[in-house]
Image (cartoon, rainbow, N blue to C red; front, side, top):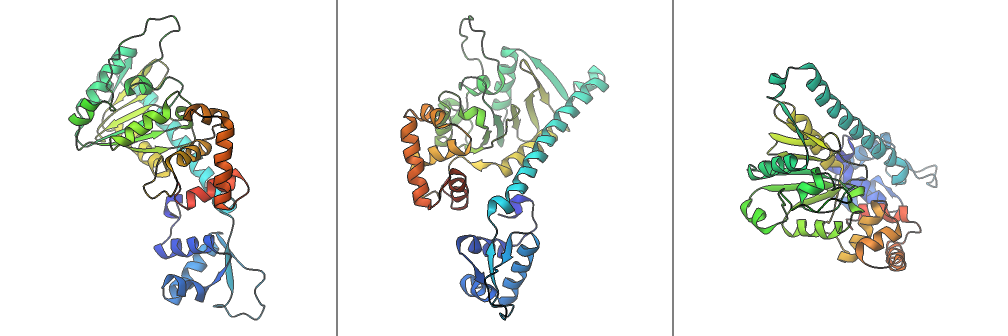
Length: 340
């Protein structure tokens, strides 16, 4: 857990921190006994967590207490961990900006012949759809996707890379691949699909239905709060990223490594769309996911086909169950207790 935040930690550190999160306070001897770990290990974990600012000495302990009797309590996660998460988001945003800057710099500084070996600019709806079809059909091991909103939730070639039609334009038949279709899923048995969606995507019509269909096909789905660039990486060897509203860039080695690293970093810090160990009903988990993504009660109600009052009632019931008094506290409780 703490490693996911970029902190050096051991399994004992994680176990001690989780115990203190779930209890008002505990001494080193309490921790050693409850977690069945040697006393020196418990002492070391306490010292490390104290140095990280995650726990503090309980001020109400007796002045004469020995070191093993001193009691420790966890600092509120929103105070201790919140700034770390914010810094991780900033680093991720800077990495994405640097990635796009590198792509553009390489295009400017190299000849067309040399650049064509590494990147290829693809302009227009049909050209992008054709390239995505080529990418999916050539996948052997993995397909990694950033999926964002700002358009309708339709087949992936439309929702990830293609531009929405003009208001008065005739609707076009989809020419891109759709990994939600049965023929595509059957053809790609053994290919691992990983999809990261952002908050913009969750506001799109039928977003929840589209994600449920992905899960039904065995795709892994995670969510981030910050906007994503539209990206697909195949087998870690070939990729495509949208660089403007009408154009994308096909990435080959070695530049595709930057796209793959960007995906892995984002995937590591994203939260699962649904967790196998969740203890809530499907509807409650959906409400929590939309709340964590920042949707208003009205937007969440529209997405789930219900009323804002029903969303409010569900959230109030979840807050009562978690024994918290705010939605911020509910979000922390949900993350810590594997509710989503």
